[in-house]
Image (cartoon, rainbow, N blue to C red; front, top):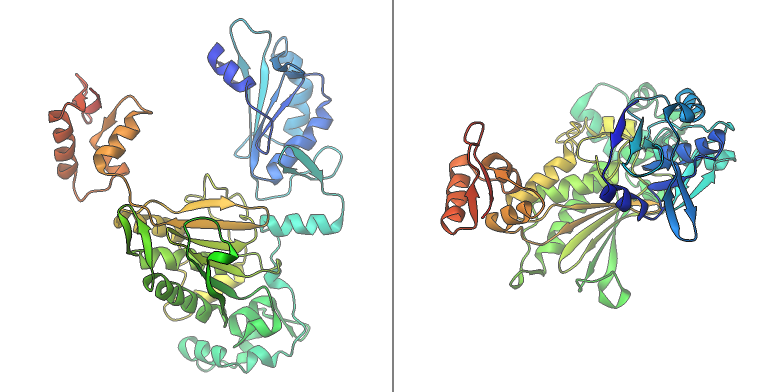
Length: 453
């Protein structure tokens, strides 16, 4: 197991932190079995870090590590049985000159499975506390939040004719398999169980799913004349309720949002101006919010249009191993049946390539607007689409060099995309002439590096 030497300054920064949703300090005297509850809690939530060998007193946290790596063996033995080293769990020792012993650092990432502690129960991290999952109801809630189990497979107590005789399933079959009878198709796709339609079938193939699934299948669209919080006094008219089967619902929600945005000016750098949110951004974010929401939560997808931003709030937390930090790279599908079947419609709203949010981000950058921001709430996922222009290339380069020693042409183009490297070279050369930058000697090979002058 690796031992990492850290500086006194780094040790002081570590000890100055506060315990919270992503961080826990433990004294080395704690029982290993008890500590497995903390690791389980982090893995079942958004992940986190535990440092063992840090004691707490009224004066704060202090470094009191293991005498040597062998002293930590009881912990390592228990951890490796329950939380084996790999993609989900990593372990290392920290040492610091002048401080006593080694601190064991455990990094637990968010897992796609439910992680059990040594007492046989899973735990869940919430703020600085761990919650014991000791009832079937709590266990099912955790399965739903992680996307292990999807509400789309539940049955709805309505007649199967609600989906077998609908106009939307007629359109779907005509476009895909015109000779197939609707009931045969629904049975083949396992959208019926014991004579009752499943939630996925109702959402996709009922002409009005909201009649069977009220309060969990609509979109609420509202306009607020403010750049601040969503308050009733700033609401323009009543929020509009958008309904229909998922395929139509997505297209209607995107179209109505665009129409609402274009009907009002938004706050820009130089005052009110016409909105210029890219269609791809609105489409991809709204599509994701509707397809991948947690349908077990009785709430709508909320779209709120403000003077300086759009907010899209989708019921349910991020599924699987997806976190705010890896959301553009990781992929997890909560509603697999919905996701697969809606992709079979003509001009499907989802391309099913796992690139939706990346497309949304790139579209914002193409019109020089700041990236969408992602935030996980207690029971929902919120995307904020700001109407705020990106800084100039010069501003972004100088901001980057405020945190880094040097920059190359290639790195600058990642910050500020341009058509060719020659255009960025011209921008950098202009900054050199203005004595804002200077080339670093001996770095011409592999790309000249520049630093602040």
